[in-house]
Length: 378
Image 1 (cartoon, rainbow, N blue to C red):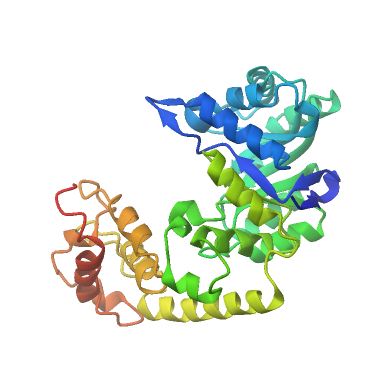
Image 2 (tube, rainbow, N blue to C red):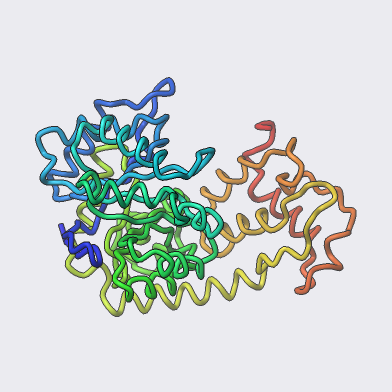
């Protein structure tokens, strides 16, 4: 296993971290035997960063972690989060949540405590006098929390602004992968400020876990799967401290640990091939649809940009299996989130498109290609 320094925390963390949001669920509950086996195998292979949150896996993730790390607490770095949804966002509320997490994990301290899923608006509230960060800061003074951070889902520029607004933050957890590089520059900026960068979603929410001839062509004969290429790409970014993978089986742990044990995730030549592919894929994707959204709203509720984004997964990335799987998730009973099948060819969208895309024909093609296995599933 390769190790890196988690920013100014100076913690030595494994390049691969264990994300605990995707444990196997049986009848609404975590399969604890399977989850604990995977966690302990990961620890045996050198994984020392474990990430959780209060609500993960029907609020059972922290409890499972507590059982898995029993007797191994000094060998792992545990991260969990304060959930801002539906809460007062005050210091005493944060203190209560911290104590509950400590109890569930049966531990005396949390190594890295995040403000969960901060956007700019929520950040103003948790950073205000008497806010949740004040409660976390007090817990840190008492040794209940060692380091503070935030997880992030907002406009990339806000990541830097939040880091600048709170010098207490030492870690940021954000999304970054081959399909979504929007946070790349901000990651570099906060890294310069001394923050450790933890990446979630390295396989794009599972989309990069599907086979792709396009990806296989980039590193022919060098990789076992699209997921491995995706993981190696993220690990090759010098600003990344830890890459979280939501692993549910021992086999997944072993495959990802082998990838994270490479001294050099990608050679300069391999990285050049991937960069060339990314540039070409962006060019092709923009030809089909830039996602500007000028065609919206559709009077019939079709989510045109999302339909075309999925079509690009198939047409540009070769991730047809992923595209079809996500296409099934459209809800044609939900206004504004309907599939291409709901298009009635009213024509309102086409004059609005700055690229002059023949939207109606493209929607027909999208449903023909992605909906071929979906008929009768709605």
